[in-house]
Image 1 (spheres, helix red, strand yellow):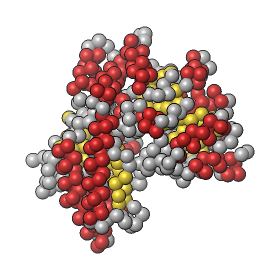
Image 2 (cartoon, rainbow, N blue to C red; image 1 turned 30 degrees about the horizontal axis):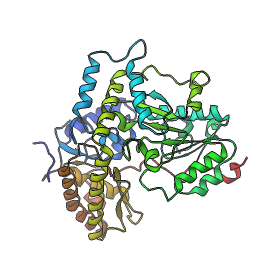
Image 3 (cartoon, rainbow, N blue to C red; image 1 turned 180 degrees about the vertical axis):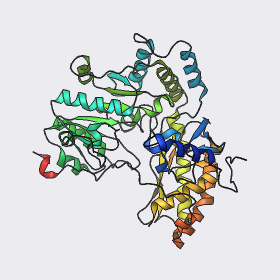
Image 4 (spheres, rainbow, N blue to C red; image 1 turned 90 degrees about the vertical axis):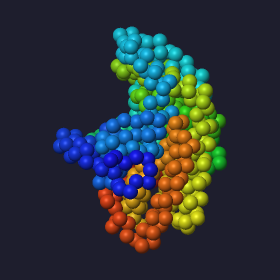
Length: 448
């Protein structure tokens, strides 16, 4: 009998997942199209590899096991799996067509909704992925300023201009690598020291999990403005979650450009570049940014329906309420168990993370142990709490109850130092995502 969302006596049978993984590895390198969904971020042998379907806040793997999903498809499911209003809008449009030989009216209708929703959206471009619009923002910023260099802080996709600043830069010419550098989040001096008259754009995630220091984002804005550098907010995670209008609405700072994807269409692939009309006007002739599927109608229909629900249900407020309770109760558990030196729940309530501190000698093994024990209790857990509107109060209660059951086991294994002997699968691999302290712009080059 397959496991479900309960305190199961046995770990789930994952035979079908393992079989598919072995077959996939023979012809796919790597097997996952999204790193955060791949085997490296889950304990192989303890966690499912392939999912079959989802509904609401639940998913089922190919072996029939049911889980309460805390990943929200790595962000896109702001409402939840199979939200009726969105799915009905997709079905209705499917009967009319998917992609057409001319523009579809949904392109304007959705652009108008984005214009009404996002503070800086004087003009809008539509594409399919976050990497698309982030790269378009960098290209048009370079064209507008006549400069070449870029400073970034966060994760911004797989394209050359960004990946050149990471440790996965093979295949990218050195000339490209020499144009992108990084600065540390919440360290205004690291930005100030790197800014020069050759910097076209500063792109950053307004926050990942750590809150910005008081006035930090305003200082970033002012430094960019004084230097003639365009400020770009990467709002893949913050958009439509922290506030309907994203971080720029929440913090009251209007960047020159901003990019969005994930939560706006409840799982359908679409992305938006918003910003100043005088900057985006360069796309008319001087800067090329077009794609065959940019006006694909199913995703546009999903966006239109999702935006309606996000506003009518005030979804950011709901996520904040549920996330606050989860964060508060989890940190109480951690404090009561005297585990604060080892872990904490941090981040804005709409998306928190279970952070293992440096005091944990084997953080990747401890994370794998927590993961396998949450899996046994029917929770698909990767360390983050990506909440959706369809996570119920009962779901939050259950998650807290599961943590209350698992954390004493974690304390015991930390104290005994035997975590690896308790794993039924592999330790988690180190995540690729880094938001600071890599490829820092050399001070000697900052003003060259």
